[in-house]
Amino acid sequence: MSSLGILDGMGNSDVSAVKFRLEEEKEKRLLLENDMEILMLKVANLTRTVEKFTTGSSTSPSTTAPSVAFMAYRNTVLTNLGVNQKLIFDKVATNEGNGYSAVTGIFTVPVQGTYFFTWTTAHAKGYSYPDTFLVTGLVVNGEYKVHVWIGVEISFNMGGNSAVLRLNTSDAVWIGVLKGNGVYSNTVERWFYPTFSGYLIHI
Image (cartoon, rainbow, N blue to C red; front, top):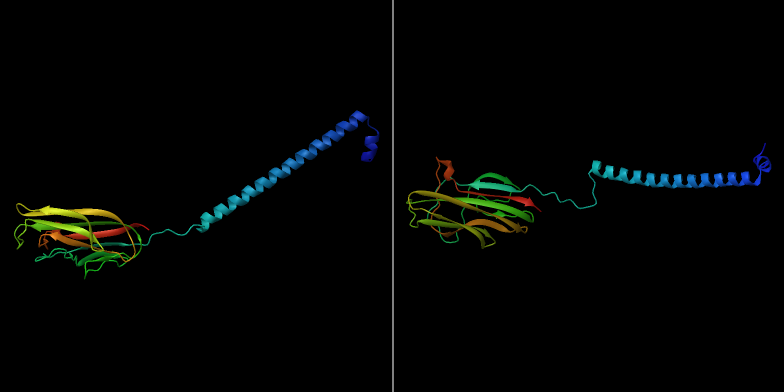
């Protein structure tokens, strides 16, 4: 029997009930289809996010800092130094990025960024040093940034300082003498080695 035949055999109230049920089911189907579309969009977005992390792709530019680090020292005594003379740490232990020169004592910034520097110097009473104290400083492009003062009353003394600086490419950094004419070192007892170190924190 056809649907029309079934409806013809039903009363008005029964027909209205069936029509209401049909409309209700149609509305439910439309809601389910809409929910399914939303779910599919969420799945697609999640898939793209997972692919981004697994492939390493990113819409932002890379901020990975290159490897820049150096550490130099000297194991011989320096005498007859003048004011503003550069201290040359001629023994290089580390020089990643090739920024430090053991010939000039200058670290030339290879890439713009924020850098950490530290240095130590030693002073000894006697050893042809007329001054009883030594003052050295971290210099950037000819300008002293921080200093360290080392006084000697009996025999030996050692001191150091550090700095964190934002620098540009090609900036020149070195250790200079402000007061005192000699830097002590000891080839046997290595704890008296003057040192100069630095590294790139981030770009």
